Amino acid sequence: MKKNLIKKIFILFSASLFLLTIFLNLRTYAATSVGQALPTPESGWQRYEELAPGFTFEGNGWQIPTAGSYSGGSEKFTLNPTLHSVKFQFWGTDLRLISYRGGDRQTSIQVNIDGVDYNYSANGQAQVTTLLFEKRNLENKLHSVVVSASNSSVYNIFELDALDINDTGYLVNPKISVPSNLFAKAGDAKIDLSWTASSDKIEYTIKRSTTSAGPYDTIASNVKTPSYSDTSVVNGTTYYYVVTAVSNNGESELSKEASATPQGEKQTDPDTDNPSQPNPEPSEPAQPTGDRAILVVTITNGFEKEFDLSMKEINNFIAWYDAKDAGRGQSFYKIDKHDNNKGPFSSRKDYVIFDKILTFEVSEFSK
Image 1: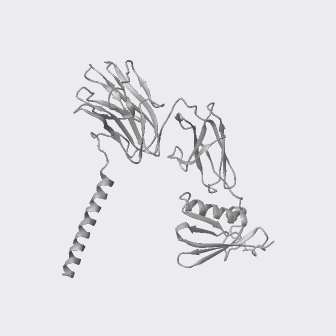
Image 2: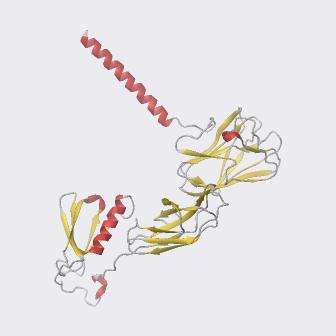
């Protein structure tokens, strides 16, 4: 009897666990599809109503009804038989258009994203706040969008109720002044940025990339003054910056791009110091002073690499390590061994791989 009871409990537990797994998977993957109602944005999305700053409605006869079940309480529509369009710009990767679907709505509406045309239909069984168009996995950058349709009669209504964008993106407000004259000045392990302040009473967001024209990552927000010092950089890497102005009415377009390459203490390369003597005799190691230290890097296989370096070089190495640990910069670091060479070589450089570093130790010489 006791064994049978334990067996029944185990079966019930297993069945419950199986049903819970199915339920969680359904919740994970059951995203709203095109054609379904979407009264509120899903997790990972943010909604902009048709009256939000950033939309430009072109053409005559736009109306704003409030009697009905619309997202945010209203929408914009037109019955005019001429070409009408809605223009906007957004920063992000994902886009959704939400409007009323009905038998008197447009059957072919064009969506132009960065010069590429797509189409959707708003004609069908009556349904409010319907997800009518979706475009996912766009490049994470600024996109220009034009939604247009040519109404032929009262039975071909063209409208916009709301717009959803992935929650790391934003709708651009063209009425906010764009920061101008962005300038980047390189230093040692830092880049100083400055720009001309916008006329609006706003704050600034700083975006950065290691590729010209992006995509950019936000590195600072709520900046009060038209200047910023980026100290999370690695010497020898070129960084590209843009700035946006932000107010209660939204965010501006991107500023023009500026770039700079931070540089550390300049080191003499034995490869080019005496080109007429390609194989000079190795010299004695320099005597330790107070601005030098021993760097010991322990590799994952237990092997230790030891370097006699200046504190400037040590700091550059630590800055590279911290940046790479945060996901930025190159996967390796070049260490110049200078006069600590062994054998008949004009120079020796050691390349340390980030993923192979187990620990490192810095022992500074006393002054």
